[in-house]
Image (cartoon, rainbow, N blue to C red):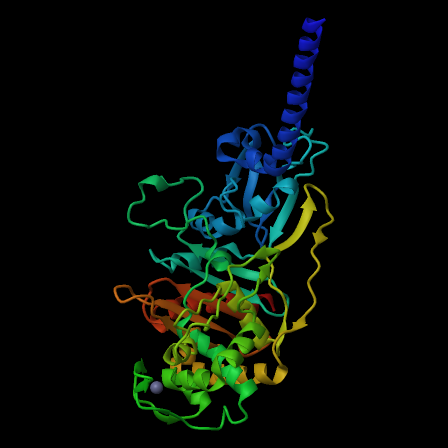
Length: 461
Ligand SMILES: [Zn+2]
């Protein structure tokens, strides 16, 4: 009898252990199965005899497809490298890529059978992107060995035409990153357009100018005084030049540090923070549901001089490139934002019907009056400071930035802007990490990118 009791106790224990184990497995499976299936060590699952949908660019170029059970990328190496962060490399390491985000549709992966569903069940959808892969390739090459990102989109339709992130690599010839001792491939899996935030330097003056316009009645008409150096509570704020007296429009075009330092200090921490938060700082911003790295404006612990520096895009300010692209599109579009997107449509392989993604409706982000004023001021800056020849005579509105990031490093170079003529509705952002002056580093890349897009727009008319 005692023996029986002992045996049944063991049996109960075994049954309990079985269900506990099963429960744990189901829990882990629910949480992790997608990552297991797409893990590089399990690549035989997805790259074996399975099929997969195609990824096209906007001109029908095939950027990725599955041929005889193997994932094959575009034949041109420059294109493969340029679209890597948008298309992905077949693993989930580039988590924001289309192949990571839409693996269910592309590879017929589903939660219940994994990749095991018979072909007639799995959908193997094709995806068409809004990118022009040729433009991406030529823009990406212009970075040379520099890191950074370049973005351009149609601010009327939301279509992202160019999105590149550097460093990149050839998916057909993946380097051994463990041997990267000089940081050449730092953050290589990040799409810097979405998952980075940089010190903005003078492109931030666009925000300080808008904060001034919306909070000070004479922000545009008064004369700011620059004597190159300004001492604030014993701390120095220095401008590039002694600009003398100048109004807001001229201060923006000459990028006078003292004028924007003065605006930030006069508005004070509270009003500056409120204005910046209205423009999307310190809160989550999204691109196709992907949370962008936050742009941050935090002057809680700032001294008076720090507050001044914060108005110039230094101190602890950071700015996400895609967030800035949205702001450029908003200013160009009379204060209304059309959300940018890169996936144009889904379609089941072989089917004629395309499932078009619905465009999100425009939303008013910045007042029409402020947007109109900024548009004119950035046009003035482009014409009088940089010269229209940079864009081959195409009338653009723009601002550069040269962001100091430490004494022994070259500054980050920025150029941001948009077309003045709505018949060519393009907004852009270029950041070159440690690239030196914005006009010298980001300027030529922006110029080449915009001219190439303009050529295609002109042809399609
Ligand atoms: Zn100055």
